[in-house]
Amino acid sequence: DEVVASRTLRSALAALDEREQLILTLYYQHEMSLKEIALVLDLTEARVCQLNKKIAQKIQSFFEK
Image (cartoon, rainbow, N blue to C red; front, side, top):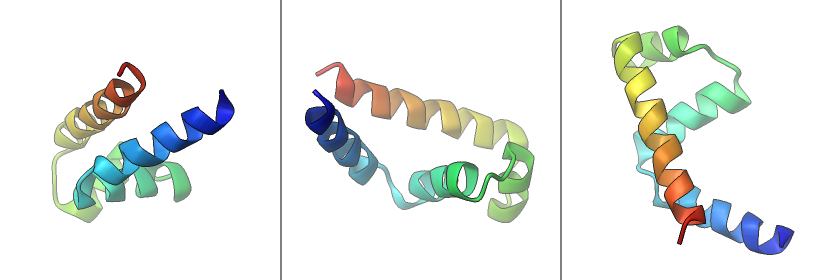
């Protein structure tokens, strides 16, 4: 059901910490590359990639409940 999926996604996003939410915002809303995000957050590109994968896993876990 679309309504349930939308609520689940909102819950998943709310459960992310501030940095994780910022990474998603920069990546999807501002269409920045992982390299650009790394520069903004003063991290390595590899670290941003790791965090991005962790974020995806966190969100996916909400849909597996």
